[in-house]
Image 1: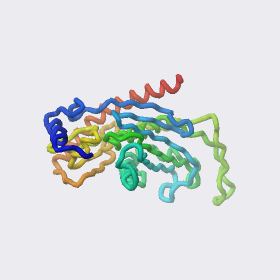
Image 2: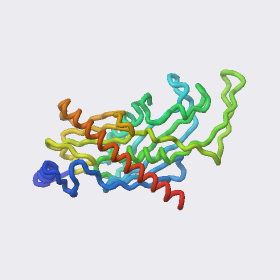
Image 3: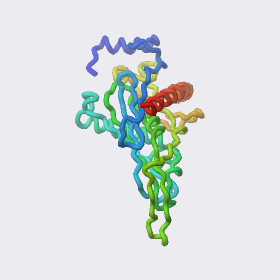
Image 4: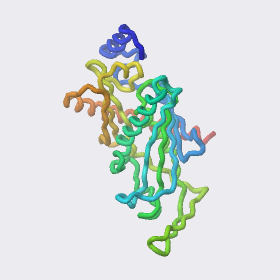
Length: 286
């Protein structure tokens, strides 16, 4: 970040005194703004702004074949692109490495890993013909502007985009033999709204000095020793966890972080639900 020693001490001192550089306390979020339906060509999309962090998520549904180990379910994959114009560090390999890191973390937190076994999305609802045809959801995230806390912002954008997603209704006629592909008729007018109510929210606690903060800015992240991201659903269950940063954490600190994340997640879910509802009302009246 090219911060001077005085700036670094100012950031750390403010966090220690529970008064951050932008006036927030350690466990305060920046304001969150959500717009839905921002990409007409996608099945669902959303844009999220948290302070100066600005991200977009889109969902595209395509016909595919179920995996061999989950023949009665569809599939979901996540890919994040960090635009080189979002931050100087995204130019070259830096952007590619961060894109991969964010994609893997989002799959771990929101989908239960590559297998999707712990997904907040009901993968069985994506089945068309068991063992032969399903919907594949491709979720793309784009970082437009980066001012810290990208993982949480992308998680909110994906949740909002999924709530905005409509899957075309399909009528399938099974083939006359087991090897024959089924005939399908995809509706252009009727859609089924994807249920995103079980998709968790991500809460990242960033440790700076002896304290940790939520919704860290990029300057605060530059001074962190470690960060723990937890995805928590409406029931308060931790669905996924990922850590970055080289410094180890005492188990008692991890337990405290989980407790704080579970508490904050319920407030954040209520805020996000309200913003999504308002965004969809604006979209429908436009």
